[in-house]
Amino acid sequence: MCGIAGYIGKNQANEFLLSALKKLEYRGYDSAGMTILDSDGSLGYVRSVGKICDLEKKMRNEKKITGFVGIAHTRWATHGCPSEKNTHPHHDCKKDIFIVHNGIIENYKSLKKSLEKSGHKFESETDTEIIAHLIESHFDGNLQQAVFNCLRHIEGAYAIAVVSKSDPDKIIVAKKGSPLVIGVGDGEYFVASDASALVGYTDRVIYLDDDEMGIIEKDKYKIVSTTNNNQIHKEHCKIDSNVCEIQKCGHEFFLLKEIFEGPEVVENSIRGRIISEKGLTKLGGLEVIDQDKLRNINRIIIIACGTANYAGMIGEYMLEEYAGIPVEVEIGSEFRYRKPIIDEKTAVLVVSQSGETADTIASLQEAKRKGALSLGIVNTVGSTIARETDAGVYNHAGPEISVASTKALMSQITVLALLTVYIGRSREMSLVTGKRITDELKKIPKLMNQVLDTNEDIKRIAQKYSKYRNFLYLGRKYNYPIACEGALKLKEVAYKIHAEGYAGGEMKHGPIAMIDENFPCFFIAPSDSVYEKMWSNMEEVKARNGKIIAIATEGNEDIKDLADDVIYIPKTLEMLTPILTAIPLHLFAAYMGIEFGFDVDKPRNLAKSVTVE
Image (cartoon, rainbow, N blue to C red; front, side, top):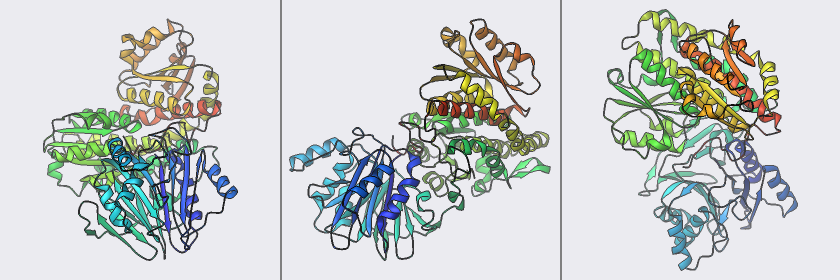
């Protein structure tokens, strides 16, 4: 959520800043602004509620903003409603120091009271403005030292970029709990919330870690610790080339493009990782740790949020059934406030598309403090989770621009299946079972394409049911998490509709009271070990005149006797059916949202990466 951009160098800053803000739009925002310093000491800033195009228009209509140093921001409201006064950049009393900020300052109320007693006047309702005034209170002409002193008083999460008229020709950046990256160019430097904003400008980046501050000038930079001010040496990294692949490729929305990229995503996730003849998987990212330690763990805790949490639930079923190891799945925002029982034989596996999910990162850090082996499944190279875990596996899903995550889910389930074989074969999983899973995994992309071929039928079904305002999604075993995922996607991108995902057996424990002819049910009912149970659930809904949409396995004609509409998937291993059953649910949600005229890439109130609590 929110996006930071910064530039210092030989070119006009506004060109990069606008480009970066547009690339960061997918993170979710409600307003935008920028501040630019010119070489003559003048400073201009502009803020606007709404889209980046509104900011561009305002820049054209007002005094032209030019200069070689600048910071910019897209805001997603946390403290204070969306308004121009709450839009970043914020400034101090003298309009000398300007700041952009992602994160939440937890002790801002007490800081504000103290600053007000000292005579500071505040214009906004935000916690960010406190930082500008706190820097001002420490400022004696040295911006670096003032920011360093300011950060010692702040509690919470932040990524900041700061400029000052009184100490020009530099940008000060700092990070704790929110992502920030510095791009290294030829006689110029760039700042952004993630590397995708730097594509086309540089492929060399420095990822700031927590408690680090960057002092960036036109011809040099340095990184120091915010705890002791000691200089830190950091190597450049290269941006993953996949970040560049972010065009819609003929699709109306990124969401649709990314759903249709699913087969390629699975292919990329398994490429080079399957040893077919031995029924083994090769996960190089896990080979850096002591294999005996991994083999001897007696419990796995999977921690994730949102869609990644549902992938984790599927992974729980896989790992317990095939690898024979107890697994718990925890929501990151809850795990961090518990007192979990963890020892050296516990592995904590964190799952996150961005690798920057705040609650998941905090849970990871808590687990590491308690001595757990920390593993990660992430899509973003160089992200915080990728750097902080002991070992892990990259998804190789490529960039995901739409806020609603789809192809990341496909890759997460795939990687969890690979991990199941990886751990299972080191324990009691047989060669035959390993070969059966890996052979079927290789077939999945082709089977996914068969499901995608039913796209027009799913679109028609979405149009048919667009008049309804409530849905119940039901599944069992491996497809219970997918029922939850289908309901989540409908709520995310077609938010005129309320939907709930339930385990099929729980329907009689409350939800069945809601069923009538105006309350459709989506049944995920492939021909698997719990099919007969799902059939009973469908009969119960039919007896109450409820409408039924069913996802079933090809060849099942009987289901048409109960369901009003049927979407078919090819047969595969039960543990892999969620990869196929998720596709119709994602498409259904997308077409529902489009039917309502929504921008399904950028649903209201949502952000792509939740980097604050």
